[in-house]
Amino acid sequence: MKRDLLGRKLVVTGAARGIGEKVARLAIARGAQVTLIGLEPDRLRDLARDLGPAASWREADVRDGTVLRSAIDEAAQVMGGIDLVVANAGVVAYGTVRQTDEASFERVLDINLNGVFRTLKYVTPHLERSRGHVLVVASALSFMPLAAMASYGASKAAAELLALTYRQEVAHLGVTVGLVHPSWIDTDLVRGAEVDLPSFRGLRNRLPYPGNVTTSADRAAAAIVDGLVRRRSRVYVPRAVVVANWAKAALNSPLAWPWARRFAARAVPSLEREVAALGRHDQLTPGTGTSAAETKSP
Image 1: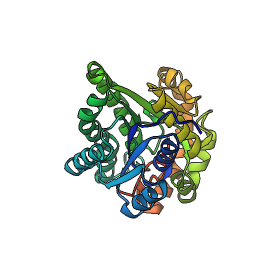
Image 2: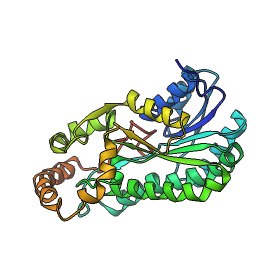
Image 3: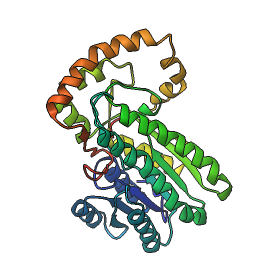
């Protein structure tokens, strides 16, 4: 195992399970000190114990700026600074705009967008001192709309622009900023969505490559950790997701609309029925997170 993070001090939000846990494990194996931040204290405590003296943990909700700031400052105190950050906490909600309630939509935005803002805001003084690097976990849906995932896609597109703006603002401080764009990751979230929403599997299978493939959480974590080591500005999981970024203008053009309209017409009615029958919209995102209130699909 490479030791290319030896002595580096890393903070991971949404660290209790899924991608966050995998990133923490791999980063420690490669020499880092890691502070785990999330909402599941029992899981965080057990994970930190399993990872050994290089790991510490703090319970914090990214919706609460005061608590999050304290957790970040305490992490810096315990580790002697912060060199690297993975802003990973997020939730997903299923449902079309007409059927999603306001509270659900606002909650997704508060965690996935405002939570990233709060994380970036409060790590900045520490990253300035270390001239560090931060990776914001966005999504393939940052540039590719998908019916019945409006709140998630909107939050991830906004998080991308937030990160790109922040990159300009902190460049003179020596801080570098990157984005992670995963497609579907093999987590409890994706597996659970396929059980709860049978049409979800069919929708995914009809998407063009790489939207129709699933990547392991281990592979996603390895790409993220490599992105930290190399201070990458973009990390695509799988790498073919880069094509969607390059082609986003074409994907959203009038030329592509006839296909998108036919695709949505097949998928939306059954998805709406299944979401309504399920009786809930918010979904736990174990691939990146900590609890139903804070925690990857694409």
